[in-house]
Length: 288
Ligand code: NDP
Image (cartoon, rainbow, N blue to C red; front, top):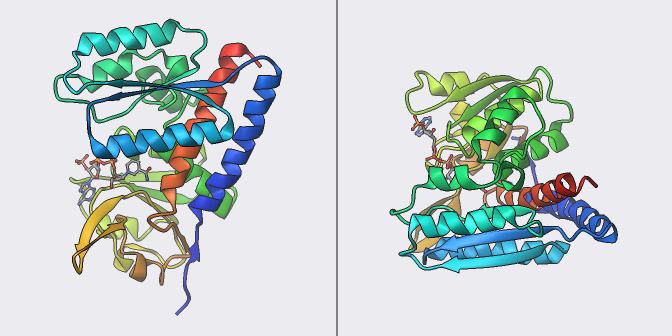
């Protein structure tokens, strides 16, 4: 039985970061230092790892990064006041507040407080609205990375039937908007969908963003379909922790035409697009 083409997110992200590095150098030559402010509140170990990786990657491509680490008991007003300062600082082009935030802070209020032109996560309602309207926007990094991989693999996506499994604000919904923008016919599945497997089996493109380990097996996939697995799930096998996606990689890769691995698929693209958005924000703010 044939094996699906492996979509290499690491290689794609390396290529993307190389173009970002060139853009950063161009901006610098024009007197603009692309700058990303990263705000981390509390002690969540995973968040610390994410922030460290983002700062490392920024430094690698020449983006200046500024870290703000606040204690876990930080009051919402203190965080909002920091965001206000960063919004007003012309030397800061992008603001990233690492989620999740401690329980005393309303994440929605924090996202709303970030100036839309500095919202490199693409979560602010103005950017969400612009994306849905098909206007220029800073778009969320993970679905943007998925679209990049799909276009690199398939070329023009016009007319393809895409099924997005999951409808979160950070992945599923913006993914559906981006695919619609790319002229796909889009079906969005969620926990109330009836006949999800049958609907999914009609798709040329499947984007799985559910957060359920290996939920999508080969019986969900049309032969030859392209599968993008966004899921990051930790499971225990033989006393070892393994990272797996939302698809059952072994069986799906025997049916699909192409598939992203976990890890090494969508993950690296997310950081790549954060850097790309920072450069885009810097360019727009300096009109370069
Ligand atoms: P959420 O938990 O916010 O959303 C999950 C979605 O899946 C919901 O819309 C939910 O439906 C839907 N869902 C749950 N069960 C089913 C089911 N049985 N059938 C169909 N749909 C279902 O997750 P996220 O979108 O934030 O993340 C999804 C996955 O992607 C996670 O594993 C996360 O770790 C990973 N992720 C990876 C990133 C990366 O960089 N690679 C970045 C962000 C996330 P409903 O709305 O009805 O509840």
